[in-house]
Image (cartoon, rainbow, N blue to C red; front, top):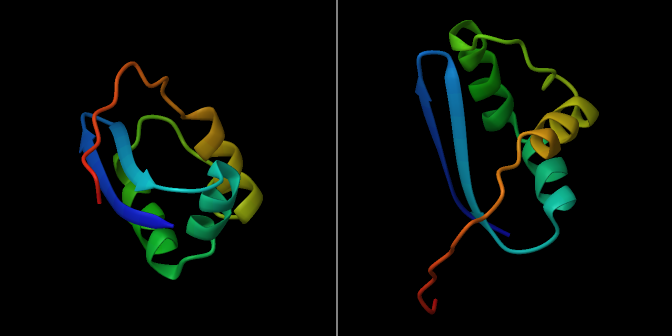
Length: 79
């Protein structure tokens, strides 16, 4: 389940923050199939320094996995 997603972009660097519960691969596959996510990906292309293969589910999942950042610390409040 995805609770929230936010995209930041500056000088060709893109950062997407996603608050979710569940399997990481399932979240990536779900997002890849969403028309809204596909539209955002199309609109972001001109602003990126390096091209990304997000036009297919497989390409989106591969890009999603290779772009993960290591969690250093996390603070959560009860829902």
